[in-house]
Length: 249
Image (tube, rainbow, N blue to C red; front, side, top):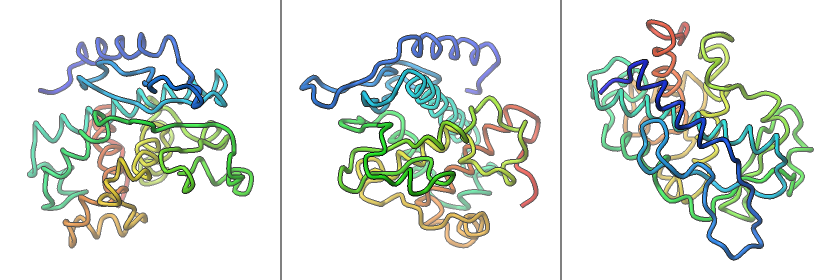
């Protein structure tokens, strides 16, 4: 079933309500960590999201929750496209070639509905890497705490909401990680519990390599993080303007 305008508006209303009361968590608490957005949003019946640590202020929390909402929206469009058009779809072939659609579908389900457990987003520069890489590190996975991701100030300054897609240049020009919700999915996939111990990984990151995987190494195209990010941005942009705003490959 395709997303109609009325369906989209109804789902967006649900997501807005979900975002009305952001929740911050203290990792010293013995209570189970739960996401502030753990409810039906934008095409997902059991969407789950990371907890937000107490070092994130109100503005951080609001922007992280907005990014989480965008992850749900963009993956819902991606999954809907898979269900409606399958492996013969031009968008699918562009980014996954003849790779297994079962793998791609499973990754979307894993990203949005798998338990996030102790997965935590924190806003303090716990390892000093944000300060050491200003204007470059938007965030990083903590090797010393495998379930934790640090979100740097550069994330809030540089990443854009999904609503701006196609209005700041083509996807080729700005890259899919330009958008906070798509970049957040990339950050999810740095965590061992989400990437299934590197079953999905950053095997190739340049656009040329990503396209080459789709054309010549589909087995890795469906296991490569950036193939997913480009696919999602490409598909979502097609819902904004006819034919999308991919740009020249």
